[in-house]
Image 1 (cartoon, helix red, strand yellow):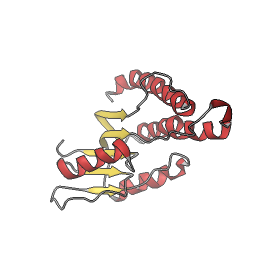
Image 2: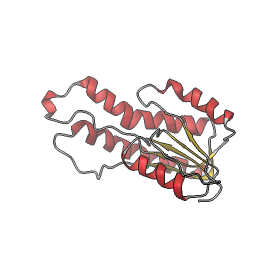
Image 3: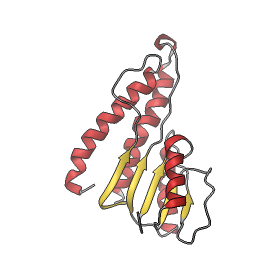
Length: 171
């Protein structure tokens, strides 16, 4: 990846952190924007790494993110990788609460929906760009992980529908 602007959301741990580290330390690009504050960047002349945390439980900071991009002269992304997620409460279904379900769905589904709408409405994705959602759901039910499994299944359905809709926009 050369001369690319890349957005990674969910870079605090897991695969998002690994992707952030790899891109920052290995690839030549214009800029990587990641939520990770855990990156130790190599001092390479071509690295441009910026950190901005998008909070999926309160997306009021998306306008601040837009100002952050303008301030850093980043107009559009070649690739946006959204891998933010939460397991939610693990345990017996009958002990779960609707509040916990709402929080899990806010992070695993509605946050992805809102961020996608924001990127598309603000025209922050280049033509022929990649909008990548990383989801570990294999469409198999996981007992005791009902919040996570159901929210990831919903996210998967959203991804499929959105990919068909964005096909005409070449995203």
